[in-house]
Length: 154
Image (cartoon, rainbow, N blue to C red; front, side, top):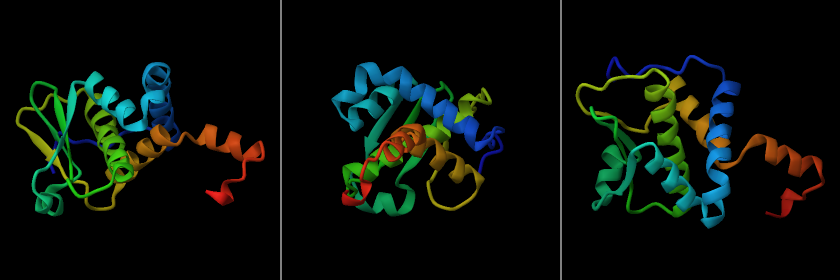
């Protein structure tokens, strides 16, 4: 792992606040067009793009990865064999890495950095927390539960 890739210094609550702020910024215009479009617009706003690998074996080696380039752009790579719901989480997760681990630290990337999504550590936990809050905000979920929403029939 490159030395420029740093752990986000804040708490999980701070991570959730960042994800929530981003969600609120993009909800009015994009969320109602579908989750995938909503995520694509966020990625584009941060000068990134989403690519789908042409070869399923790519996913086994580096799928669900994030590549960050010296000009500040980035690419989220998805597998061609996963379903849209999985892709949505992967996009949100990799976006979390980009925002929390590169933008917050204002990292200048000298050479392309690629981070694969495998493993379990603080970096991955932080990106997971960001993705969960972006896709399923805890405040909205708790409001539904507290107002009697019967989630047992989902």
